[in-house]
Amino acid sequence: MANSSESVHGRAHASDADYAHAVCKHTGDVSRYNADTVGEDCNRSEGKVLILATVHDTFPVPQKKRMFWASFPDIETALAFRREVCVDNPADLPISCEYLDRDSVDIIDQAGRIMTYMIRVLGMGDIMGYLWSVKVAIEGLPFSWAPTICDKLLHAFNGWVPECIPEKFMAPGREWDHHCMVAVGEFGDGTLDRFMDRMNAFVKKRNDEAVVDEKDGGNKLVSVVEAETQLEMTALNAFRFVAAVAFKTYCVGECFIRLGRFLVWFSPASIDFLRVTSGKDLQGVSVDYALPKNGGLAPALAPSAVSPLKRMRYSHFGCNVVHEDIAYALGVDTHKEKMAFKHSVEEEGGKLPAEHGHGPEYHAPQSSQSRWMDMDPLNVMNPGVGGMSTLPKYGKR
Image (cartoon, rainbow, N blue to C red; front, side):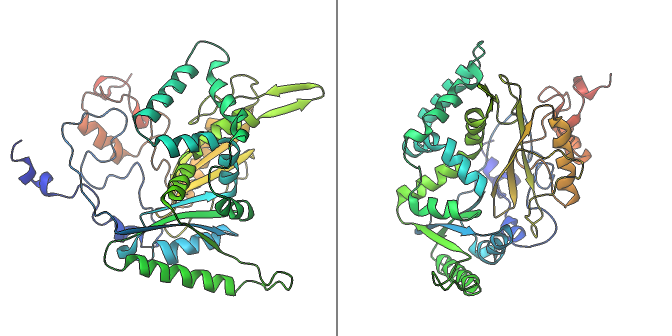
């Protein structure tokens, strides 16, 4: 082990050296997904894993960093911005590129202000981790009110605190339906200047094409607002980070139905598989999927699919990996709808899941199953993962 740094693995990259080139090729394949077996055997492990040692790549710190909130009237314009500005070439990739649709902005604002402020102040270190563990512990108490009390309180007091990002971002957030938060760094090779040239050309071209309104002098098709301080950058990052948590809080706090003089509370109990525990009238699912690099439109639901009550989409825009929270009425077979949605994603060339793993719910391809079986021949780490056997040594009943 003393000479391990000189071994093949010690000298190899710990990250995909070709990824920057691959993500900029606007082809019909996806950038990354859970069942991908490219790379070392340990890649794409799921569930419990045994780690003996890790190797990490280091990357330069940018000499300068700028961050922007770009807003668009439709998803097609947003995707054009992604192709022509963000992932135009592998030498000029931004530091981060995150997408939020209008529902995401509204729900985070209506249910995620407190969590956003907590992350802004406390960061994602030990204190925030401890507070989150307290929330989880409360939700696990053996009382009927326990699973939802924290989210009820977060929602009830949400309006008592100011908007968690400045008005200059919230204004276009309310006006436009599609948004991209993009951070760009300068590493001494002109990356930032080239990005600015591409972005300015894109904005000018789109806005010059806008129909002129005699009353206000023209309607912009694209709006770009810069985060001018580190505090504003931190606020935007926290705003995006709480999207999934805010969806649960929103469902718990907003799901009321007034029937005459009666008020019924519908209270989902988890994020990954929102199932109502109180009013028994609302449920939902969270899915993550990768779309083709030359695509990005929301996958169409099957004609036989049940119409959801809410579709909230946010994504890692550069690689087209999407997170979608979908709410349904009670009585809908959410597992059936989830599997039908998986089929719709795959029909359009996408992959599901993309980040959060197969677990026991999704059936993994044979190539992934073979890799996991080679790493865990006794089947003691993750029995049942990816649709495999739950028995020792992958036996059959």
